[in-house]
Length: 244
Ligand SMILES: [Zn+2]
Image 1 (tube, rainbow, N blue to C red):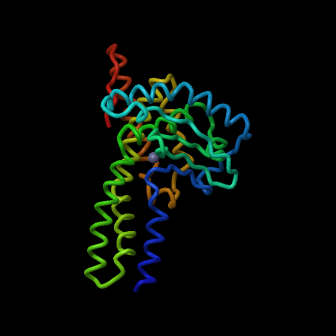
Image 2 (image 1 turned 30 degrees about the vertical axis):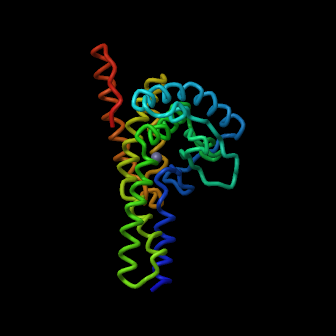
Image 3 (image 1 turned 90 degrees about the vertical axis):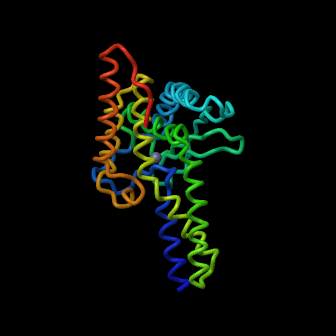
């Protein structure tokens, strides 16, 4: 029984990556990889334009948080052995860190895609997804611990399983929220969010990604709806408020 529980824990933890956004190696369409040096410099150039926009959107929602809460650090993971991925974490100083690894950067086809994914990672911070995931994991951990303890099992193993389930429960919802925020941020930074969101085309049909992310078609239609809202406001001489 304990072996079974341990196996289940491993499987769930492997699938529980709500704050990372991997591009699977086996995507539906083959990805032409660009050279490392130019893709890294493109990233820093685009990030320099998108970060101030993301920071200002963030501050409009989190005026009461410490200033560091919205001051995004821009990083690259240069490990060439890692599969394409981007993720948002919190540094020891409390500042959010947006990290793209080098294979993710090499897979981008244009600046719009970089801007969109950067906006998506910033969106996780703006919508406080890490905080909420930790709260879910805590609630799940308590529940899982009780269930396994009642069943006579090892409560520590139960905590792991419960935590993984709790952490995973909102991840698809969070991904769609981050996509919505990304469309606003990319557009405000002067990029084409519709072209940027076509980065999802490369992840269509990946079962690994579907474990933690909504289907690409759902994500693209969510972004299309957001762009429509943005453009309607523009045509009326206004600006659509960021909402998710
Ligand atoms: Zn995400």
